[in-house]
Amino acid sequence: MSSNTNPENAAALPPFTPPPFLVELLDAKSPTGHEFASQAVVDKYVKSAQGVARYEKDALGNRIATVNPAGNPTVMFAGHIDEIALQVSYIDDKGFLYFDFLGGHDLVIPSGRRVRILTKNGPVLGVTGKRAVHLMSAEDRRKVPERHDMWLDIGAGNREEAEKIVRIGDPAVYDVGFELLRGSVGVARAFDDKAGCYLVMEALLRLAKKEALAARVISVGTTQEEIGTRGAQVAAQGLNPDVAIAVDVTHATDHPDADNRKFGRISLRGGPVIARGPNINPLVFDRLVEVAETLGIPCQIQAEPRPTGTDARAIQMANAGVACGLVSVPLRYMHTPGEIVDLAVVEQGVRLLVGFAESLKPGETFAW
Image (cartoon, rainbow, N blue to C red; front, side):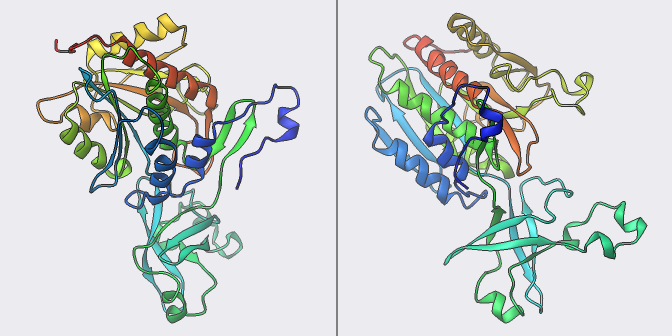
C-alpha cells in the first residue's frame, strides 16, 4: 500500500511529506532472520551516499555505514531492521498452513488478517483463518485462540498443491502499509523498528556533510533484534565502539487504557524518549539531555530499572563494555499491524543524534 494522506483528516492541517527513505523502509517486508527487503532499502539510500567512507555487511545481515573513519572516539548508532512475523511450520493434508511466531505476538491479533508469505518465487497472498464466531460455543467465544487454533489459507486444495507454492520455514508478514492519519502522525505495520533504523541512518547521512567532526560515526541497521538483539551483539563486538546509542521505540502511554502509575507518562507527541537506568551510562544520559536542551528539542525521560528489551542490552556488554545510551520513539499499539508514531518526533530524534555526535570531543571517553 503506498503512502497517502486521508483528505478528511488532513483538511485542517498543513500538508506533511513523510521522508521517502522511511516510507520505503516501512513498506519493506523484513521478518527477523529474513531482512532482505530492509537491507535493500538501506543499501539504496546509504551505500553510495556522498561522505559515506565505508559500507559493509556481515554474516548476520547487519548493514554498517561509517563516516569520518579516522575520527576518535568511535560512536555507534544502532536501529534494527527486522520485524515480527509468522513462519510456516506445518502443512496439513487439506493444504492449510500452520505457523509459529517470529518475535512476540498478542494472540488476539493474528486472526482474519491478510498476509504475504515470502517464498523463493516471490510473495504469496494468504489469510489467517480460525473458526468463525457463529460456530463457537459461548464458552469458546470467551477464549483467546491458541496458536494451533489458527492457520494460513492460501486457497490450495491439498497438501501437494500447497507444497508447490510454499515451503516449511517461509516467513509471512501482515499485508498492510504506511499511511498518514493526521498531520505528521502515521500508522504502519513496522514502525518497530523501521523508525529507529531510518533515524540512525539519516543522522549518519547528515553527519557525512559535516566538516568539523571529531568522532568516527558508525550507523548500524541491526538484524534479529526481535529474537534476542543478536545482530547488535555481533556488530558491537566487531566494531568495539567507545560510545553507542541504540534507537528503538517505546510505549506511548497517553491512550485510554494505560495506567501511568504502572507504565510512566510518555506522550506520542512529547519528543524523543531518553532512557535512564543501569543499562545506560549516566554520562551519556546527561550528554543527551544537555544536547536536547541546547538544540531546543523536547525530550521525555523514561526509567529503565533493568537491562532494556532493546539492542542497548547487548551493546553495553560487548568486549570490555560500551558507554551506552538509548533513545526511543514513542509508539502506540506495539507489535500490531497498526502501530502509530508521530514523524515529527522521528525528525527530532535525528537532530538529537546529530547533535550528540557533534558534541563529542577528540579522544573523549565516558568512563566513570
